[in-house]
Amino acid sequence: MMFAPLLFLLAATRVELIPSQTVEVAPHTWGQFEIDLMQRPALVEATFQVESGSNNLRMALLRRDGLERLRNEEPAGVLAWTGPSRLGRIRYQVREPGSYAMVLDNRAESRPATVRLNVWLDFAEPTTPGATQLSTGRRAAIVSISCVAFLGVVAFSARRLWSAIKR
Image (cartoon, rainbow, N blue to C red; front, side, top):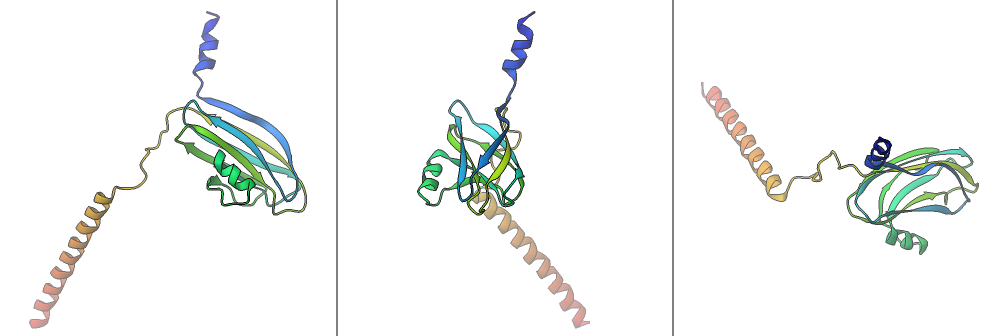
């Protein structure tokens, strides 16, 4: 009987990685938080709210190698990001296990930012399908069918107009 609550905790799919933590991000710089998803893919959900300081804070999720490129001031290949604001939210389904980083970017401001940050990981199976685009063959078939239907309507209309003009 004592093990039942423990089993419910082990069965939870949502894990709070960074629980409502206040961080300070210096001006003209960025702060980072490592996210290691070596075991399996997960939905990464993160929110931030600036409590004082910067009005133009941005948050981004990127791969670990992208973080290294960001350090070298090269294009980083960001997976998800927010616009400059006092608050923001990212929801991104990470499909491949690996090392990731959450970055709070305060490079555009000349004053520090005190930020409340929350990060959750949800290991439940994604509810949305993996494919978001049609295959090339299906796209070609849809375009072809649409063109044939359009030309059929045009031909039918032209024929009706032509017969009405002849009368």
